[in-house]
Image 1: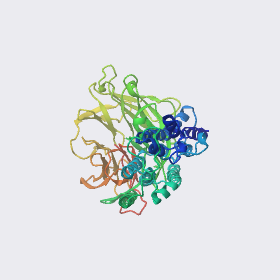
Image 2 (image 1 turned 90 degrees about the vertical axis):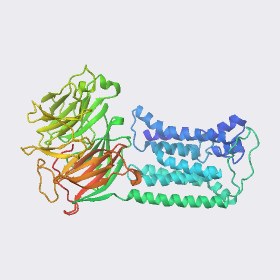
Image 3 (image 1 turned 180 degrees about the vertical axis):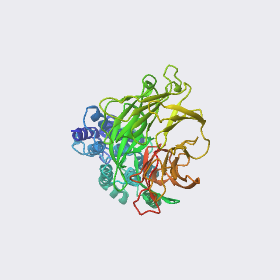
Image 4 (image 1 turned 180 degrees about the horizontal axis):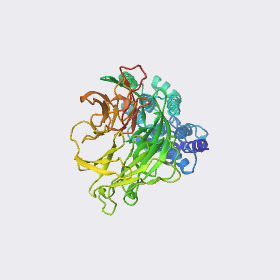
Length: 594
C-alpha cells in the first residue's frame, strides 16, 4: 500500500504541466502549438525569455523534490510502512508523471528539471555536480539540451564515485534509478541531438522576450568547433578526474605499525549528520552507533567479510548521551530533549541488538552524562551532573551503581556516591577488574578516583589534576588492577595484548594502546612499555581525501575489528592483525574501552 500510494501521488504531482500553464496564462496560447511544441522550461524560455525559463524550471524542480521529501513522511504519519526504497519510488513516479502526464494525453516534457528535483532529495552532492555541469555548459553554449545531458552524465559519475557499493541491497534501487533517469533523459533528447549535429538547434535567450510576441524560429547555427573542442577537453578531464577519484576511493587504507597491520574493510554513512559513541556486542557481529542529533541509535550487521549492513534503527525519547553493551543487551543513557532536560531527570533504555525494547525505562538522575559497565558485564554505572550543571535546585552530582538485570521491573540501585555540589562529572573510566573508577570533571582539569570494590558503598579515593599534553597511558595498582588514564587530550582508547601471547585474562596489563586523535584525523598506535608511538592510521573523508574528526572508538576481541565513528556521521571498520600471526588470527584484547 505504501508503494502504491506513493507512486500514484508522486505521478499526480509530477504530471502537473507547469510549462503549459505558465505559457497559457502569459499568452492565452497553447505552448504545444508554437516553438518546438514541448511543454518544458526550455521551449517556454525560448519563446518568452530567460525569466520565464527560470520560473518554469523552478516549478518543475519542486514537483520532483517535494514528493520525494513529503510522501515518505506522510506515509509514516498515516501509520504505513516506510521502506528504504520508498523515496526512490516517489522520484520515479514524479519523473514519469512529467514525461507522460495524464492531463495532456501522456505527451509531456523531457524531465530535466523534475529529475533534478527528485534526485536532489535523494543525493544532494551528486546533484550539485549535475548542476555545475548543467550551468557551465549552458552559460557557454545556451543549449539547454546539451547542458541537460551533460548534467545527467555528471550526476551518474558523481553518484557512482561516491557510493562504495552501488549494487548492495540498500543502494541497488538508487543505482538503477540513476541509470534509468539518465538513459530516459538521453532518449527524450534524441531529436535535439540530431539538431545539434545538423546545426539547427536553437538557444535560450538571456534577455526577456515580450510576452505574446512571435516565437523564435531561427536556428542559432551549428555548435562552434572551438566550443566542441573545449567541451571534449573538459569532458576528458572530468572523466580522468572521476576515474582517479573512483580508484582512490576504492583503494583500502592500510598501515603497518610495528608488529601490527591495520586495514580499513568498510565505511558506512549513518545519514544522521553526526555520530559519537560506538560499541560491539560480545560476538562482534553487531555494531551500535550513537547518533545524538536525531535521537537515534543505528545497529549494523558485521558480515563475515568485515563489511557493514544496516540492521535496525532505534528511536529513543530524548538525546542519547552514552551507549554500552551489558548482559547481551544494548543500554542507552538518555537526557530529556530540548528544555525538558532542565525539568525532568534522565533515564536508561535497554534494547536487544535486533532493536527490540527490553523492559521499562531505568530512572537516572538529572543531567546524565556517561554510562559504564564493569568488565564482567554484571553492573551498570551511571554518572549524572545534577546541580553541577549550574542549577542549584537540582540534587548533588552522583554516581549510581545498578545490577545489569533487565526484566519487567527496572533494577534497583545497589549503591550511590554523591560528589561535591561544585563538581561537574563528565566522563567515566572503569578499571580492568571493575574495582576502581576515574571520573573526569568538566571545566576544572581535575579527576576523582573512586573505589568500587564495595558496590553498595562506593567511596572517593582521592583527587588529582588531569594530565596535560601527555598521551594516554596505563596506571597500575599494587593488586594488579589497572586502567587507561585520561589526559587533557580528547580521545577514545582501547588496549590490546601482545601478538602470539596467550593472555585470555582481561585483567592482565596491556602491551599496546590504540586511541583516536581528533586533532589529526587518525588513530595512534603506541607501545605501553617502553612508551613509544608505532604508527598512525589515517581516518579519511569522502574519496579518501582530506580528514575527518574522530569521535568514538571500540574494539571487538572476537573479530579483531576496530570501529571508528566520526563527527560527520561516518563509521569506519578497521581490521587489526598481527604481522607475526597467520592471516585471520586476532589479537587478544585485555581491556575495555575508555
